[in-house]
Length: 478
Image (cartoon, rainbow, N blue to C red):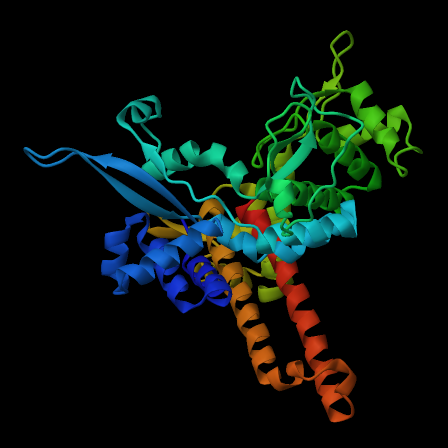
């Protein structure tokens, strides 16, 4: 379920990229769920042409999925096919991460790859495909799946057509590619000459071949997840554990296809150590040091005679990182005593009585009660009252951290903060829009100072937004 400020952040992103009309259609789908075009017209009070054009923009940029379902007709009427439109919240939020994706590619693969990716993210067009969901395919699906989940599953193969580029190769009479006659490839976004588009039917001439280029958001999320887990382990444990974890994640990348997994693929000790030795910092590690790092990462050494294979519990690493993130928020917002109390309850995982909390954390009972009430009021804690009857009636207050609810609340707060940062960035640019229109070489004196201030403010705000998005991904994407 998308949170309230998650919706507002999405609408803000769509509005800044595609305008208010498209944003209005997107907001309607975010708030009301999957709808037909007729219902979108009714709820938004826009005309049919405006709604259709807005939907085409959203589909083209992979923010909405269109699919068709067959509805039974009323008595005496034939069944009819209705097209439905489903918003893709995650893909909308990914638009905010394009600078992060570009920075990652630049760091890992170089500037040329960054330029190619930028072209794919900004200029390539997506194939618009509407998948029909027939009665037969519906029977194959699990009963627990929603219509939206079925539509996404059915449309998944077409995801690869998002960025389609035609290339040409020399072929012989058998249709095989000639190694000695490579043809120059086209730059992304550049049109080929008409002569290159003409196909000769004789043997030994050019043959048109379609190759797929697309921005794989799931791969980016997985890479950023791996990077986040390695960074957390490096800070929480040491460099050796981080090196071994990095080696395991690199070795399992080809075998792992899903972003959200609980454990890495099991690997032999030989495979892990071989991957460790490939990195410059890993070459100084011994085999025993690598085994010790695996123990640090939560792996148990196998018994004698059993195959020495290991897998890493990535879910626990992510959960620890989530705990640390929320604990840091409590520390900054409520102080060190509240941090100690919250940390105790977070680790306990069950209801704890007020006096026990006070005794364990060495916080005065009066202060403990005040802190607990404040955290409960702000939805950081769950409280239950227990009344006992004996010689006299007594009341006890029990407290615990309900992580499922709290994590949703924290994520909603993060979306709110991200929205505020975007609004502030837009405000700063609007305030100094005249400065931005002036060529850099003409910015002197007071104008140069104003430009320098704007640049400094933007760097701080945008870096804060990207750092905040790291936390958002930790709770939503990983």
